[in-house]
Figure 1 (cartoon, helix red, strand yellow):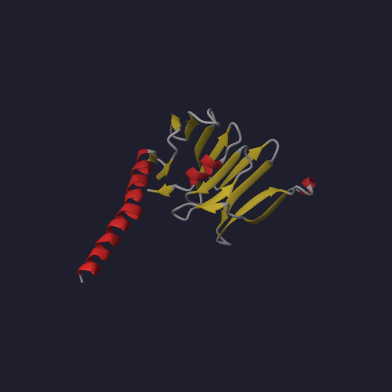
Figure 2 (spheres, one colour):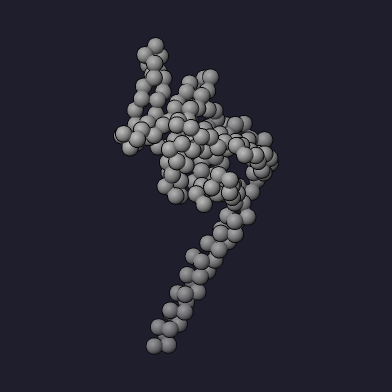
Length: 179
């Protein structure tokens, strides 16, 4: 009986040290690098080496302050409308809109194999989803642009420019939540 109690106590200590303690540390890191944007109804986390450099009604910018990609900038825009278009001189354009009759997100894009044919419209393919299940669509802007519909008429557009490192943007999108 005593041996079983000692085993249970050892298991409890193990669980606390290995599972609960690291989670508490991560939770504190997450909170200290969390950005809550009340006016947009979202929150997300950023890495500690990214500093908020601009915050107004329609644009937030963060700059990487250290490391190999020091000086890279993430811009987050809040846009409204029946659709959202992303455009790049080299990679063309893409438009996303919600089709109420099909109850699906659609994408329109220039037909690369036949540019004179105009736009091709098809069901949109999500790049990923956020923690809350919001769809994430790819844009065409360099180095990476990601578009998240908050509703059928409200969008967040995330873009990273600089040295070509895109993982910080993908990491940030992975933490986005509606509040």
